[in-house]
Length: 247
Image (cartoon, rainbow, N blue to C red; front, side, top):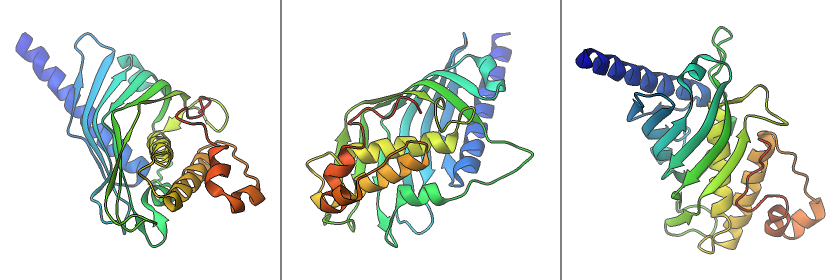
């Protein structure tokens, strides 16, 4: 009996892994792979291991965002609902690689890639009470303004609340929107590091602000202040380490 239960549980984990890869790839229109998935026998706990999102076309890094592990607190019954209500989503050791190609940053280009649409298969939507990023890292590659050698920025823990709710949210957030929000938050925090050259700080702040705006934040900059000092102007528009709790 235990052998049968174990086999069924392993099959469920495989199904979850396959669905996460399929739905993430479809939503982002970027190849997404997952090392494995695990489910708690007593319910309420889902683990995702070794998630990797490929870079958009034209960028040299094989992976744009890699994650060591994701702990998901969700009642299994929610997995059949739309949107799926997730109590907590904890992302361990996310690593964002930032590079430039053709005058565009990779995470901004990812936002321009249209998801694979299928009117008969609407995208999975999530409502996340709490989303945490722990032990994050941002790798800035040479070729960006002022960057001659690779820069590795360690990012403090971040926490977002009520993702998929509030203004700009239409009955939950698609996986694409969650991933882009994570990238935007990491890029913004990297821009605050003393390791990053001033000219790159301005570029990262600007791109993070633009992406945040596309994801539903209403950010309005004073054009005169932006032209005079883009870093200071955009810093005043963006919360430091506390992404908008309404999204």
